[in-house]
Image (cartoon, rainbow, N blue to C red; front, side, top):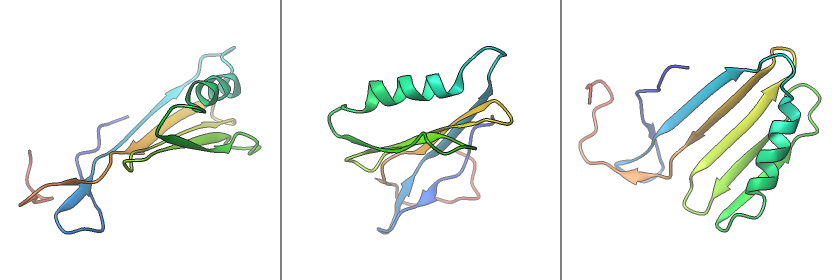
Length: 104
């Protein structure tokens, strides 16, 4: 995966989210559903987080984690491609004079 170099606007003026994503192809023998189960177990009761569970989806089982501050993380497994994908976004933050065309 390549790093994302763009911010997403939030609803308040001059506020943005920093997106991120990464994917990895699992080696033969690695169990993507077991990996999701372990992540769900580790994060299910973390203070300040809630989990939306879609591990029963037959094609792309996954979980989405939401923090009280607005941070979100989605982890899912594509069964056909044996690919684990982790994506998310930071909480909204203030940034004055942001120019989406400028390199930072």
